[in-house]
Length: 241
Image 1 (cartoon, rainbow, N blue to C red):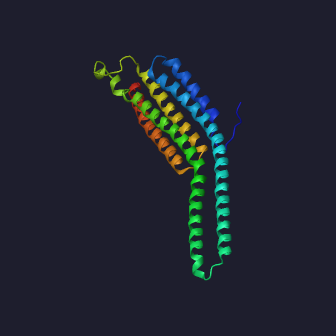
Image 2 (cartoon, rainbow, N blue to C red; image 1 turned 45 degrees about the vertical axis):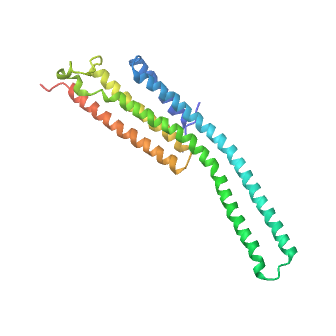
Image 3 (spheres, rainbow, N blue to C red; image 1 turned 135 degrees about the vertical axis):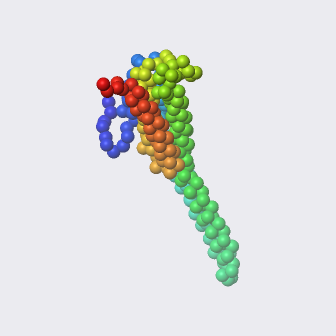
């Protein structure tokens, strides 16, 4: 049971929608490749949800370790600087120029510590980015596979002039082709929603840019499919008396 919220996209309803779509496709096209694609999309959507939860746990662990290492680096730098200052006062420099080596060493230590802190602070973000980009890459590949499935479903091939043509889908009726194309648009929509789940877990610019690219890609592909559906509908329309 999942709690409805309007603050963010929840993974459970996306997974349930993908499963229902897979069942519908399996009922109408059980032996077609599009059913295998739908099953793959369900599994990938579930993995995205599991990865999001796992990424949060791993990020918390990495973030804790990163903060601990930052504290150690800063502490070691402060201790080293303290010993350097103590040694400088013990030697009692005669003039201001004798303090230059100490100042130079202190500046170098501050720079190196700052670099170490920045690198350690960015480790959790880079770990999360790596996990999410791997899933987004698979979603983008699956979108192209779905697009390949609709490429040969051309409305013109269903006309009498193309009935015996090379590559014609003679084993599908116009109604079946229309259902096939509609299922492709729904699969592409689920791909976009699965990508959006990744955006819910990260505000990283690279992740958000990749999500936006996939959403734009699936939207453009869906538009091409809907154009075919409209053409198919016009071709099936009964002429007026």
